[in-house]
Structures are given as structure tokens and as C-alpha cells.
Amino acid sequence: MLCLTLTGSTLEENRLQIERNRPWISLAELRLDCLTEAEQAKAAHFPSQVDLPLILTNRRSADGGKATGSERVRLQTLFDASRGNFAYVDIEGDVKKSDLKFKAPDAEGRIDLEADLRGRGVKIIRSYHDFEGVPADIYGRISRLANRGDIPKVAVTVQNLMDLIAVFRIESELRAIEEKIVVGMGSWGIPSRILYRRCGSMLSFCSDGEAAPGQLGPRVMSELYRADRIDEKTHIYAVIGNPVYHTASPRIHNPGFAAIHYNAVYVPFLVDQVRTFFKLAEMLQIRGFSVTVPHKRSVQPYLGRITREVKQVGSCNTVVRIKGMWKGINTDYYGFLAPVVDRISDGSIKSALVVGAGGAARAVAWALHNHGVKLTIVNRSIQAARVLAEQTMASYDTLEHAPRYQGAVDLVVQTTTVGMESDDEDPVPTFTFTGREIAYELIYEPRETAFLRRAKAAGCPIVEGTQMLMEQGKLQFEAFSGYHYPHWITVTL
Image 1: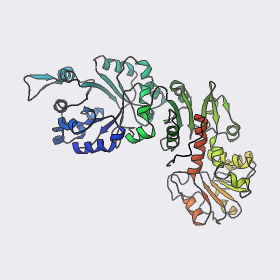
Image 2: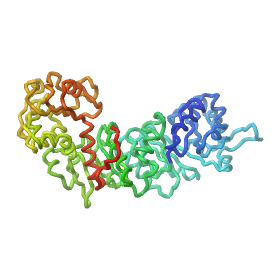
Image 3: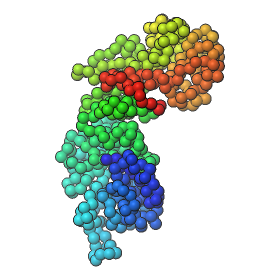
Image 4: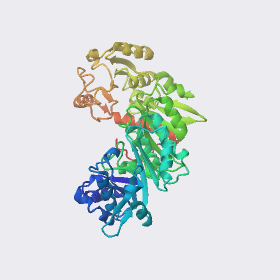
């Protein structure tokens, strides 16, 4: 189940949030602490206004909520609203039984909230929140919450991969507890939100905005990741990096898997230690993964086999599981070539200027060198340019001398990150395009950089970074699934 956390200050705002997201959710959580006092008084009637089950909660500030005032008032507000037809009521695990007896206007004496809810068939969620980390006794905490006969919920802050492993282990450690809710908060915990069933969780929370750290939108969760359809047979693929959540790769692979009806999901993982990720990959039986900065070199000691391109370039961007070992591939190499290989073959491209000498430049330089293109590498650091040039038998120069090569090359490839943060930045502002050379940009976000704008204005044929991204992604898709990428779908990058 995907549960929409409602964040509106009025019941009507929340009704509209449900209506907007209804195709992708199975239930919703009404947060009394987000409502105005006047709206809280009417909350008991909200279940009759919507067509799906609701969780009711009144989250205190210590647990990431907005409830102010005394604890007695907070719990009384929760009790008053719970008289409505809610499917679940969330009560913090440390709230004492003696604090859950209330006076109701339509009854004599005091009513025990827990007994009243159970008597009406309402399920109680007992929750624990930790915004500092993952407690060492997390499995014991869940067991103690479950011992009351209620649904235990733990929302913990994942701060590294070891924490994430602890969260995913909940499924195997506490399999006997059939109904439980597990939430890994923060950017490190996002994989546990998508793969919530692999944590043993009965649901995952999502929101229109970000009601809690790391929450994704319901449409992204359901349509892009198909999180609510992942089962024990779903193959898991990943992309690792630091940072990683900017990557467009999930928008390539997940629609591809869906189009060919392949039961698989492609999930981003923020990774601090590659060694730890390989442990997690074994635990989740991840079948393959893409590798982004800064791990394209550091994954290699853990691979049982690597391709010629990985050896030459010294960089691995794709890892697949084969016959009990990991194999490293470099699809950047062929992904870069795909848009220009025909023009290399017909002699239109005989010489190239490569701007930059980093990891991306290595794949470009080797690909062009192996296809007989005469290279010149220009870079801010002359030493880095010299090292790459010696390996690929190319010429080299400093970035400030780039104008020396204008009008003398058939292809200019921009491999640096300059222009990624701001589309006004240009890595070679003094280089003048003649209109005859092809301008190739590796950055795909933003789609049109200052480098490409100048080339386009000069009349140059251009190759955008999205073309290389898509081509290398298709090659990864084939390595992962064994199938060609479906040509009939349109991918928006």
C-alpha cells in the first residue's frame, strides 16, 4: 500500500490532495497537527468525505509533528477525532495506558481509547520515531511495540549504508510480525521507502510535498518505481553514487522494464563505502547496478571480471552479476560513440578537441583514439592533460590555449562539469566556433549549456548530453535484462 500523508491546514485541502493523487494511493494519513483548531473539531467527519481508508494521527513536535500545547490536549484532540470512521489510529508507543482514558460527551464515565478502537474494529498503530539515527535495539523496539497486539511502526533516520542494512534486515529478523510499518527517513533511507516490502513493511508513506525527510511523491512511487507492485520475485537493479538523486537513469530503466513486462525495478542508492554496498547487494540479491561519481574506480577491486574498455579507461559505470561473480562494463565508451560513429566511419570526423581530462574525458579519449581520430586534449591542469594524452597518443595543451585549435578540428567534446551548476558558465569561453565543427556536450542537465548555445548560434551541428545518456542507458538495459531497449516508448529526460 502507498499511503499519502496529508499536509493541508483544512479538511478541504486534504480532500483535494487525495483527489489529485487518488490513482496512485491505497490509503491516506490525516495529520491533525497540520490542521487549524477549527478544522480539528470537524475531523471526525472527514472519513465520510473520501473513498479510501484513513490513518488518524496527531503528531507531537518531538516526533516531527506540529502539535503544540499540552500532551493532554493533544491526546484529547486525537480521541475526539477518532470517533469518526477511521481505519487506523496512530498512537506513540511511549504514551501510557492511563493517559488514554477520556470523557466523551455522549457517554457516561471515561472511555478507554484503546478498548473503544478495538471494539469498533479500528486497528491501532504504535509508533516510534528517531530523528537522530537507527537505534542499536531497533529489532527489540519493534518486538516490544508488537507485543501489545498492535501494529508496530518505526521511523528512523538512516545516516549511512550500515544503517540501511539494519533497516532492510527487519524483514528477516522479524518475519513473524506480519503487520508492521518500517520507514527509513532521510536521503539515505529513500531505497527503503521504494523497496518497503523488502523491509517487511505493509506500507510506505508519500506526500505532495515532503511531509517527512526523504518522502517521494505518490506518482513517482507508483508509476516510476512501481513500489506498490514489487514482490518477492522482483529483480532489483540500482544506481550508486554520491550524490545520486539527481540522476535521470531511473527514468530510462524503469519505463523500459515496464514496457517489456519485466518484473524488475531500478533504484538509486546513496553510497559512502563501496565495500558496504556490495554487502547490501548480496543481501538484497541486486542483479546489476550503474555506477556514477565518485565510485567508477573504487568498485573495480570487487569485480571478478572486467571488459577491455574498463581496463583502458580505468573506469567502470556498469556492474552485472554473472555466474557467481560481478562483471564490470563501461557503457559510457559506446554510449558516447553512438551519436557520432557513422560520421567517424565516413571520414567526416578525423580530428577532435577534448575539453577536460577527468573520468568522463578518459572514456571519450579512448573511444576516439581506438577509432582512429586524431586527438588534442585541453585542460586547466596541464599535468592531467599530459597523463591522458600520453595514454591515448594524443596532443595536449592548457585550457587557455583552446583558441589555437578553432577551425582546425572536426569535433569539439565538452567533458567537464562546468555548466552543470549554472547554464551561464562556459568551460572554453575564448574558443570561437566556425560553424563547421560538431559540438558535443556531455552534460545533460541543464539540457542546453552556454557551450551548446554558442555552438548552435555559430551554426554547428550539436550533440546533446541526453543523447549519450540515453545510448549508454540502453546498453546498460541490455546488460541488465538481456533484452534490447523497447524502441516504441518515449523517455523524457
